[in-house]
Amino acid sequence: MIEQVRLVELYSAGGADNLPRTVFAFGTHPMATDDEQHAVTSARAEGNKLRIIMDELLRGNNLEEIACRAKVDDDVFDRVPLGATPDDVARCSVAQDVLPARCPGSNPLSLCLCKLDGGCPSGTKPDGTPNIVAMGESVGVKDLDQDGAADDRQFIRGAVGITCNGIDVPIDLISSYWTPSGDQQRPAQGGFDALGPAIVLVPPALPTNLPCSLTFSPEVVDKEGNAVCAPQDGDLANGCSPGDTSAFTFSVEPLRFTAAVDLRGAVSRINSVKIKANAPLDPTSIATITVTEADVAYTKFVATLSMPDEITIQWTEGGLAATTAYKITLPTSVTDAFHQPALQPIEFAFVTGAS
Image (cartoon, rainbow, N blue to C red; front, top):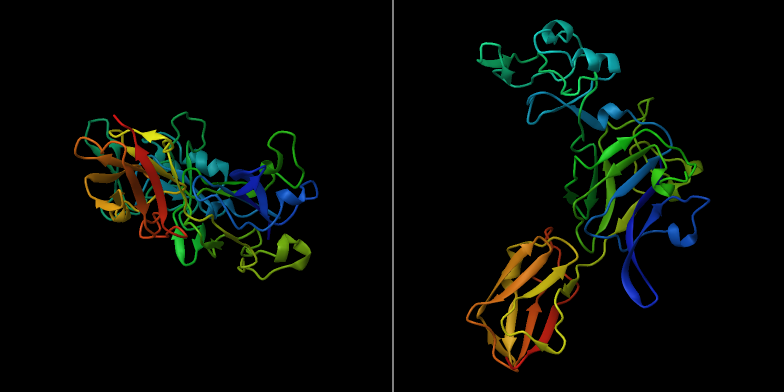
């Protein structure tokens, strides 16, 4: 069962808005205050991270895969067979010349088996010709430091995901991971973010202003084969049906824009105007940005994304008129990368200087 979920929300305090803090968005902890544990309605859209804390160990084989020496299917990562031990990883980490004998494809616990028709290119033979590993045989575990263990791991695509109003959110497979360590005792180092065992899920960005929930592959199970579920309020005493995680939801902050330059007072007639968003934007949508000069449509500008979450508006004909009022309007057709708009059109008004 999911015991807690921690993520970053935005809140207001002391007259300041959109301050970030990591809270328990699901479940509770006896050492946390009320401000640190509650349902989240304004999760940070960009740069968030979910720590999904479980009540017991899961089968890590179905959450992470290890790096191989060569491409075995669509990438160089492959799963560890159920029942494989560190000794199996070590025997499939040996030198290429003894690999077929130590790590044969006929052994169901062998790792990094080629799954490509025609074989998998894996380095070169002593005579300099390409070494092609036959389909069903091992290309070897990547072990450059020769310690008998895999050098790299990667989260399995689709093992755990985030869905926001029907949108499947991409997950950073390199930054996401499974950690079987930890318990409910808050350590001095790491605090609540060291509770475990846990799945750490990293989405590069979340769709703005949408409700979201977690999805788990049916393969993600505990040691007894039970699928993950979420008890009401994170209270284990409430129990839950295997596979049912509907008790946990959260909502993401709306799309927002702020001027990255000071538009108060006399604004430069020549310098570009940068507008920062709180989430990556759909690059095609910024074509709908409009500018007015003294309330008349102005077209001598170009809008581009200088960064995924930053719009640069450059004046194309030597600059703007002196001491003149301008207004930049971002209609709701300007959206985030998931095609979600701001709550209303956003306007930035300014007056140019005399020179």
